[in-house]
Image (tube, rainbow, N blue to C red; front, side):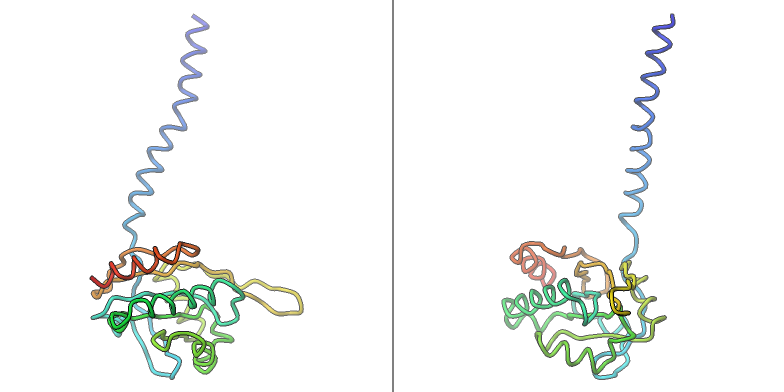
Length: 192
């Protein structure tokens, strides 16, 4: 009888994590439909006011970063420049937006200077800290200011490019470090 009790207890202990997995899977499934994107009020590199409504009517690729970013942002914007070139005339059917998560340094003038290194169709957006934080929250973008040597700082941030259809519905991300041909294929599919 004791052996059966021990076996039953062992089975219960082993099954408990599986029950938690089912709840986790249900929770993940519920969160998979979480809304990405939403209202924002920012300004572009020319100082013009921009809201999410200005992006409607064309599919959109949107990326959050900052101009002092040492690797992720210039790499992503260089890839995006290449993809726009490869898309040819179809690239004009796409909104491409770079939103700063460093409004302290990324003024419209700084964005304009920085983006002059990439395709001219990439539009930079910035705003106050409250405005950029609200935009990042709406798009479910992680960002955090991190102190570095010499009293300077950097910004940790999400690194995906988010794709939206012409009605503003989230489609899928282009993951950072994905093969370039995959990102191009995703943009071509978005434009169909």
